[in-house]
Image (tube, rainbow, N blue to C red; front, top):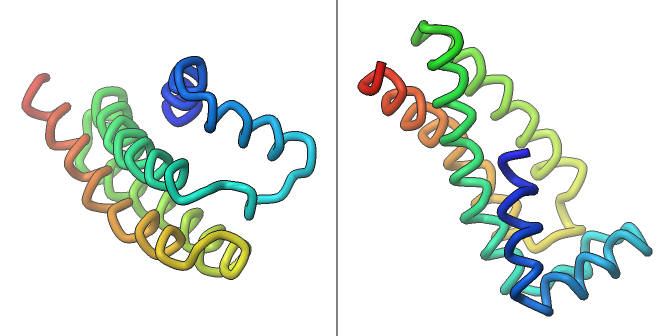
Length: 116
């Protein structure tokens, strides 16, 4: 939800994203995304990971649950981007989408801790 909402809203204003999105849904190929959309996805993933840390801390009220959530997300991203999608999507994207997962989840959790 946190990833797809900004993507859908952006696609209303950016025709390249909506065209590439339609092509992806028809063909199911990840290599259809140009660099500009991958950069957008990278920034949206940063936001989504921070929001995940915020939500986990807000609901769980524990820093340990934030670390568990970060580890689970990191494992999911490593599997998807360093194994399943490696060579399908640009390598720079696969590397850069995984590295900030834990710091962004922690940052979101820290923000939630300060606000509660």
